Each structure stands twice: as C-alpha cells, then as structure tokens.
Length: 260
Image (cartoon, rainbow, N blue to C red; front, side, top):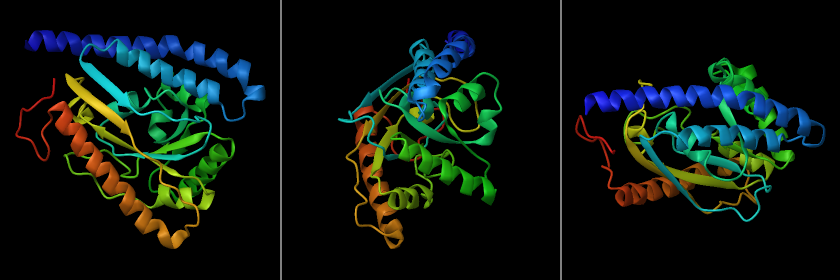
C-alpha cells in the first residue's frame, strides 16, 4: 500500500507539472487573441483555471466536487472561502466561472504557473508590505469594475487544524466600498489532500459549497465587523454539514486519520 501511494504521489506531481507546462502556451495564445477586447481578462483567466481543473481530473488521489451555481457569472462579487490547503485552489477552480485570485507574491515567481497568473490578471500581494496591500486593493477594485469577481481567503493563510483562523477585514471593506455582495464558499476535506507544511498529495474527498450572496447595499465601514462575523458563521455552519456528508472528522482528529 505504501509503495502504491508513493507511485500515485509521483504520478500526481508528474501530471500536474506536465499539464502546467503544456497549458502555458495555450493560455498565452488565448490571452494574446482576446486581450484587445477583454479588459477583464476573463477568457485568459478561465483558460488558466481549466488548466488546474485538468490536473485535478488526472489526479487519482483526489475526489473533489463543487455544489452551487450563479445565475450571472459576470456580476462581480467579492468571493471568500475558508482555507484548508493548497488543494483549495484546484477545488474552487472547478466552479464554472472566472474570478481573479488575490495571491502571495511567491506564487507569481513559479515558472509557467506564475506566468499564467499574470496573463489571467490575478493579483499579487507581498505580505507585510503596506504599499503592496494598497496596490492589491486598487487592483481588486479594477477587476470588480470590469465585471469580474475577486477571490480572497480572509484567513490570510492556511489553517493547520479544523478551526478556522480569524478573518481579516480586507475582503469585507473592499465589498462595502465597491458596493458589491460577498459570495461565501465553504470548503471541507482539502486539509487531508495536502496539509499545511507538506507538498505531498494524499488521498482525499473534498467538497466546496457555494452559499447565498450577502448584499452590502446600504452598509458603511462601521458594518465591516458585523459583515465579517455573519460570513464566518455561514461558512462555519456549511463546512460542518459538508464534513458530515463526506464522513470527515470535525475538530482535531487523531494522528494518522485520512479521508481517502
């Protein structure tokens, strides 16, 4: 069994790298052909997400599903989700609409993937740098004005346990100031797929549930705390239901528990 898992892990890495390499020129062509009339880089961004979804579908260790649809994919939202692992990116990319991801700067330095992120119009953030944070917010507003949603993990980083980390204010301030709804997504199971502190692919089942949008109409910055709390409560409740549906442990599971 251990040898089989090792071989599956090597295959997962191999196919992921190959898909990213082969996908780069495809995204580049789509970007070059659509950039003059697609200021929001919707087509290039969607092509990039499809690269990630393709790698996911070829990974025999992961069984990921999404639930929920949007009636208008071009209505801009500030999308927020809990963050369990790097695998969240693969899972959330399965939703069939485009959104620009706020991501730490080191991701943009990865060959091929970083190039595709730039072509897709994703947003770079240098942690702890105020100028970078201000520029990232400005870019988020730009994407929203171009009728493309923005995807932000309000925890800021991946949680090492079942418990979510505290939500930061940024996503909620942005939504209120831009006058767009918050679109919550609950994620469950990805922490078993690639836990924080490791890049090893592990067998896992996971699901992402799209929740009802939360309108920000009439809100001011004084409502940031209440909006943040409401969003967190809805995500927390939904992820518990998803964990129960998937048969996953809730809380700090005993060492050695997997969800394959």
